[in-house]
Image 1: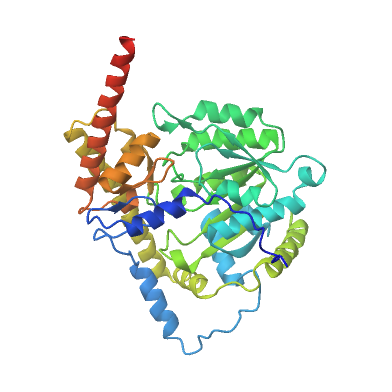
Image 2 (image 1 turned 60 degrees about the vertical axis):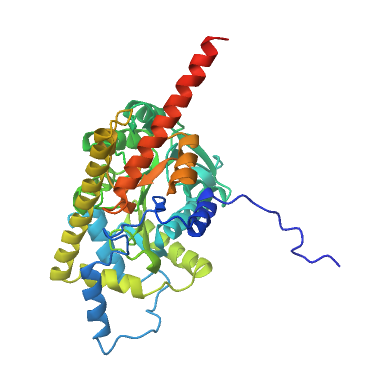
Length: 425
């Protein structure tokens, strides 16, 4: 008898899975991991925020702290309320009118999944017969297509990065938004865009929001790195607030993992802005049903840390200063890498490294250059060319810069030789 799982098909996982395994097996002492979006201390170790440590101490000192359920499948009301005010602002009319409906999630990945499931079941144009399809920038988080395609939602790409300047291509992006069908769903990032490090200006965000409002688009913001672009979380969230104030149909999928350093705690949230309070109540019921069916009760410890920090004025101020310090450290690492490449006289223009922001830089390497960096110099980047600035430190930066320089020189010379050989054919 054939086992019922005997014919489970093989699949091709993201290259990051294989690359991470390859990195772990690499025995070279100079190996450098620039693949993952995790802020590291200058010694290369985990960076634990003091505000988080103090919040944990405060939690553990409470004799009433326990491990029982908190009574809801969508997370504690207090946690969700603090999150809404953090992301939408204290003066948000949507909050005052009880139109922001929220649920805790398993990180931003879980929030994106819940958003996709909610859209698949309830987004008006789709339930009325239009094709379930989302539009995502050509350069976006590698897991975005998986999240939507897994649920049978078609994914289409729109332009985002100018490959020549390595900066945001506003004209092409805006043109695309204006040409896709009315009532489309756009998946965007609010700040410190992954993988490019390129964001629209506030003026451009206003124009994009106005166009989305005019075209009746819904925008799903994946907010994974608030605070890492400017160092100020309110500045980085202004893009979201512009869309909210303009009345663009809006969903936010977010994580507290990056800005609080709570990566493995998987603390995320989903926010849906309803048109009125009555619809909001129905949406909340659907969220409770969705959470019950998909995950059951939400993990408590990570969300309690976030709740403790946001509810304590001193801890909140400390956290904001620590977030600012991390953002400044990323800018410093960018400056150091760019300057070292300039000092080495590495062929090319490297100004985009410091013009980009956040944890990542889209350097613009070819697949061959990425392969040589990995195999010959033990410097690991993702296959899409994303370089994690967060993985640079004072110990590995010189090796990274010299490796990049060597690869650029080698591949440029090889290209020149190939061109000259063709001239003589």
